[in-house]
Image (cartoon, rainbow, N blue to C red):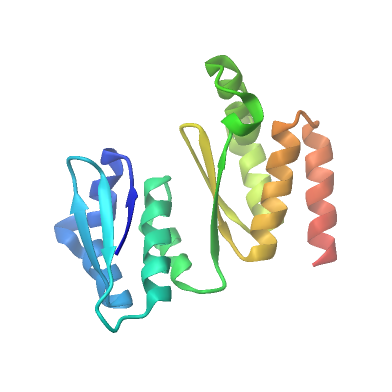
Length: 172
């Protein structure tokens, strides 16, 4: 049995209308989700002879939904070739609230431009929530997005980040 805590406001997204999303994930993996909507703790219980990999993948799906992804996007994590990475912006900025907000703004960009370019050029999906940036994609896509985020959070010019991403895209 494994567990993860997700924000209470995301519990409804995990459960879905009439429990449809939850049921779909349980059927796809053979695992059971035990959800405590009061604390936000979600336990993934695998059957006695169940596949441990599917339980871990379902745990990643739950974590991704908690970080802000839609169930449709999080479902991609049931593919063993798709990965989830969560980056804490505070690791690059410290805990100063103004600096955190400024860095979130750098990652998102004006009207979401920077986020959109990182997603398009790296072929990864991103969700920015609170003090974290979550990334879903292939190992190569996640790595490219992580490098781009590291550059931005380290103070690199947006143009330099875009140039790196273009080079990465051409080398694929």
